[in-house]
Amino acid sequence: MNPADLPKLKTRLKTRRLANAFGAEVMDIDLRERQDDATIASIRALWNEYGILLFRNQPLSAQQLIDYSRCFGELDRHETVKPLRHAEVPELAVLSTIPVDGKPSPTEMVGRHWHSDLSYTTRPPLGSIFHAQLLPEIGGDTLFASTAAAYDALSEAMKKMIEPLWAVHDYMQVESMKRRDPAIVAELGRNNPPVAQPIVRVHEETGRKTLYVGDQLTRRIVGMTERESAPLLKFLAEHMVDPLFTYRQKWQKNDIIMWDNRGTMHLALADFPPGSHRYCVRTTILGSPSGHLYQA
Ligand code: SIN
Image 1 (tube, rainbow, N blue to C red):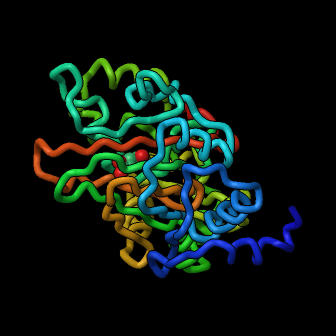
Image 2 (image 1 turned 180 degrees about the horizontal axis):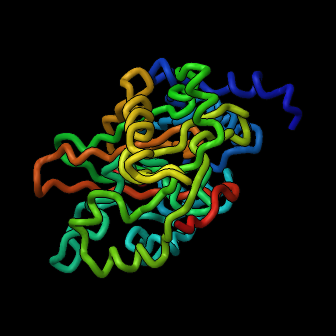
């Protein structure tokens, strides 16, 4: 495909903006159908432009979701995050509050902090495709933030200061680890040692700079003590979720959102009454290598 044709292709798809900073809904498309190369190229171009794409009313089977997701790259089989992995379909991650064998779901607390998926690995995914299948009557919303818009809004002096810095992403530091089954936490810890990532990442397709820290995952800047790191990381974590850079998704059954992990982050809210059930699945599209294992 000739890159010069992209603007024309993008306009083939009907879209509606979701928020000022980012996000668009793509309308009048049935993702159960096989999409031709030109349509996939236009979806990719819209994804790069808007960071998250919402598609309403998409009752896809597991195989249809996987087939669609593969149009954007190789899929993670969730080896390092086994509690997420669907029992029969390793390319699917399950995000569920439904008890399993009388025990709390192993994923009921997943995603309850601001993060970009699997940032604590050395090959973080370029994007994820999330399918809302069963929702509580109230809530179960997900918040999204544009890490590119947050970067753009910093002063030039701050941009210059943070440019050379790296932060340590440590999954074990997430608050909910304290409340999860210790055997699960121990396995996750073994499979996910701390990883150093640049605080400023360059999106490889758009060239935009983005911020790459989370509110709980990152407590240390490489070369600094935690005490020295805290004020700057706290500032960045708060700045990144300024309402100006966020969008709140109120899910409807069979919504699909594709999020770009290189230019957005998200937070799954536990804003539903206890005992409510929410069941969603996600595919995770592998990205390029980034960062390295951190040795203190
Ligand atoms: C996640 O993939 O981080 C979970 C998002 C959600 O459950 O809303």
